Image 1: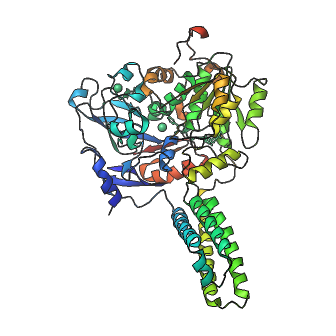
Image 2 (image 1 turned 90 degrees about the horizontal axis):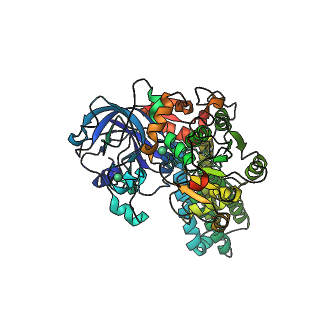
Length: 185
Length: 391
Ligand SMILES: NC(=O)c1ccc[n+]([C@@H]2O[C@H](COP(=O)([O-])OP(=O)(O)OC[C@H]3O[C@@H](n4cnc5c(N)ncnc54)[C@H](O)[C@@H]3O)[C@@H](O)[C@H]2O)c1
Ligand SMILES: [Zn+2]
Ligand SMILES: [Zn+2]
C-alpha cells in the first residue's frame, strides 16, 4: 500500500521506525493536488503542441498557424512548471489566462467556414472543461493558502525578557578583548 | 507509535510507524513530550533540500524523558532523565568535536560516503533531515532514538517548563550563534533579515550581547511587532526601502553586522525583481536557492563588516556580487549550529530569568494536527510564528 516508503526502507537501519500505515490526512490539500495534476497536464499538452503543431493545425483546419500553436505550447509548459512549484497559484492563474487565449483562438477558427468545424467544437468543449477545473483550482488554492487580512494579533507584549528589554541590553555581554586581539570564530 | 512522515513534496502525514529500537550501545530512546516545527522543516517540506525519501520521519527540535539507555551511555544518562535533544548529533571525541565544531562532527553521519561525494566532506548527522546528513529519523514522533546519546543531549532541570527549554534544541542557540559570530561591539548596529523564530532569537541574542541597536527586517506585521517587543527597530520591506532605512539608521554608513535569518526561500515579489529571476531559474533547475538577502546584505553592510548566515542554503546560487564583498572586506560566517557549544550558557540565562524563549510560541497542538500546522506555519496563517507539538 505504501510502495515508495517501503522501497526507501532499504536505506534505513533495523532500529529505525518504518511506516506501518499511512495517515489519512495530508498537508497536501485537494486543491494542491489538482494544481499538480493540471501542471502535468499543461506540460503534456505543451509538448504535444510543440512537436505536433503541424498535425494539430491540420486537425483543426488551422493551416498556417503552426508557429502560433508552438508558441502556445511553450506557454503551456511554462504555466505547467509554475503550477508544479511550491506556490502553484501564479501558475494556475496564468493557465486561466491561457485558457481564455485558447478559447478566443478556437472561436476564430470556428467562424471561417472551416471544414474541420467538428474538431474545433470538440477542442472548444475540452478547453471549456479544463477552464472550469482551473477556476475551481485557483479558488481552492486561494482559500486554502491565503493569509486572512488583519487584524493581526498583537505580539507587542512578547519581549522574551522577563526583566524587560532595558535590563536585557548587554546583560550577557562578556568582557571581550580589544578587537585587534580577537581570536576570530 | 505516531510520527509525522514525509511522503513527498508538501505531503506530510501523521502515520503509524514501528517504534525505534536501540542499535548501538551509545543510543538512548526518549518519550517525546514536546517537539516543534522549524523553518528548516519548510525547506524539506518544499523538497528544496535534496535526498529526502518517502517514509522519512520529520523533526529536529525535540525533548522528553529517557525511557531506555544503551550500555555505553549509562554513565551519562539514566531512565527518567529529562533531556532536550540538540539537532546536531555529535560523538564528542573526533577532532572537530574537540574544537566544539559539533555540527561538523566527523563521526556521527552514518551516510558519510554519500555526503562526501556531494559536499566534499561529510558533516554531522542531523535528526529528521536529508540522507546527506545521515537520514536519521526525526523527533516529531512519540519516541525518538538518540544516537551518541551520552554526548548528544542537554539535561534540563524540572523547575523549568518544556516551553522554556525546548528551543535549546535549535532556534535559541542558532539565533545566539548568529549573534555571537558577529563579535558584537557596544557601538554596533546589527541588522537582521527575517523575523521568523530564528530571527526572533537572533534579535534577543544581539540585545543580550550588547549591540547599540538592532534592526529587524520582514514583511509580516505580527512578526515585526514581536521583533519590536524584543527591542528591535523594524523595517517592513513591503512598505519601505531596506537600503534607504538602514542607511538612515546608520547615518549612511551601513550596519556593521548583518544576519541572514531567511535563507534560501526569500519572498518573491515584483518589487524585488531579482527574486522573480531566481524563481524562474529554480523552476528550470538552473539555481537551487533565492539569495536575495545575501545580495542585499553585501550591498548594505559597512566595509570590514561581518555577514552572519544562519539561514539555510541548499546548493548553487547565482548573481551574488562577490567582487563587492571582496573589495569591502566583508567576512562571511555561517553553518549549522554547534548547538552544545552554547547550551550551558543559554540554560543558565534561562534559569537566571534573563531570557524566556517561550515568547515565540503561538500554536500548541497534538501530533495529529501536525500536517495541517505545516501548512499554517508555511503560509503564516492565523498569525503563526512557532508551532509546538505535544505527541
Ligand atoms: N543554521 C542553523 O543551524 C539553522 C537552524 C534553524 C533554522 N535555520 C534556518 O534559519 C532560517 C529561518 O528559520 P525560521 O524558523 O525563522 O523560518 P521562517 O520561515 O519562519 O522565517 C523566515 C522569515 O523570513 C522572512 N523573509 C522572507 N524573505 C525575506 C526578505 N527578503 N527579507 C526579510 N525577511 C524575509 C519571512 O517572512 C519569514 O518571517 C531558515 O532558512 C532555516 O532553515 C538554520
Ligand atoms: Zn531547525
Ligand atoms: Zn565528533
